[in-house]
Length: 314
Image (cartoon, rainbow, N blue to C red; front, top):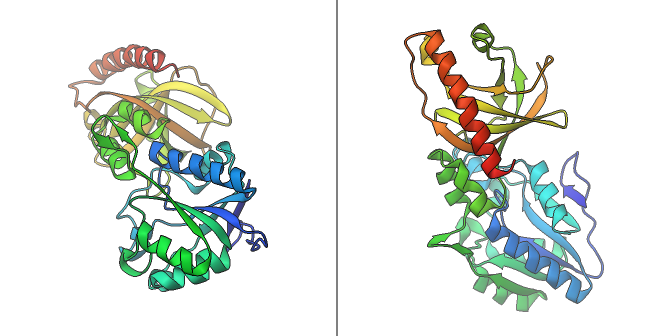
């Protein structure tokens, strides 16, 4: 799959002569609602004999307006592209989003971007899709402009699971409440935080449990303080473990940290790029009266984590 953008390392997009089938949206988290849209996009492209393209943004638009950090990330662009490739999509375009782009009115977007830059023959959008300055346009406005500028519009209804509409907002709510075991129900995969291993205070090693101190990728949504059953990928190898998020109150630490105890790992992982998959929250963070009591609890956490990971088949 081709990955396009306006700046390196992305490839420069070359406007196709024949036209293209385009999926429009932010695709934050690529959840099951997005999956329905992408499958429809692939169908439209195959039926018409066109290439398929996802057109999205390099940065979340809300973070451009709010100075960054307002909307927490739940997926990297690299992972987003990987998942889209798995759907059989031919390309993904990460558009730069700035205030000038945001000021574009609906007609300019339809004429200069959809019809002009992309040469779309058909666009696939969700029913809550918005575009143009201030989000003034929706699917009906895009359909009206499509008649004028030569492209069709297919609209996808929201995906419901139980009484909930599947959305990126729902995924963030689940993360913020620590209900990470519910995340795959709506996303189709567990929640993963990328990061890097750094030197910590070696507290875990001092009580017999070696841990990796993690710096999560900047801007990512972090679950609330507590202990989680996790699977950590380092250098292509996956390790079961428990991850503690919090301030280590037993040792009087005031700085929030993310530390993972890997069950079967050995060696030095300092500086390694890792991915931590959150499977289930086991308990909240507790201040123990002694390191010995903490050590006993971690042993219990390990048993609970193994049970949770077995149940989740990861």
